[in-house]
Image (cartoon, rainbow, N blue to C red; front, side):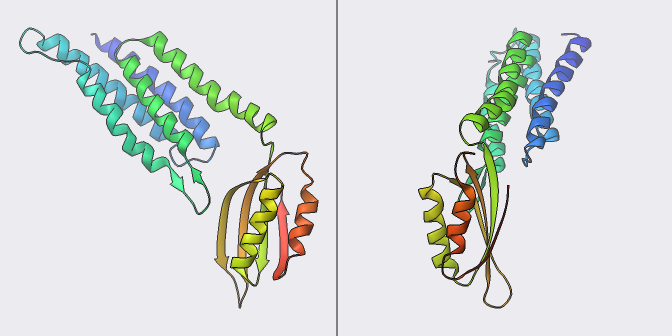
Length: 219
């Protein structure tokens, strides 16, 4: 393998990893631009090294060129686990973790010289992250809103608010609770809902609850 060939493979994986990372950065994920570049380029390096070791030492020892790449796929799981964030009522980062794993697979494929396979996998990955997300938002849950609720009784208010929201087929993505001044509690809820749902009516129901002092929301 010539030096030009090695450089081309590394630059190709750098481009692929960077494009995936940019999309993750736009989605405000922890693993973004630099992380995906490092995963893609590192995986490519492993493939190239394994291939060169196999070609250089095939006459001396019995080598398996797939052994080193297999360890990449095993080890990338730890990096993916670090991208997953569990909050009180939701789990974020699963798509990013899956994207990191696919990026590593693309890097391995390009490192072995399967450019077409790597490019088509990257194309499918980007289509999934960009196009299918738009389709999902349009036909499944098209709007995101955040409630800001101030209450005197956090346990009772939380259970009743969650009940009201779930009865109206609204998905709660995240709940953050913090103690405010005096006896007040602040609750922040991020929800996904269909645009046909009468959102203002739900806000009025929450405001009518006992112990709810104030409620604001932003769409």
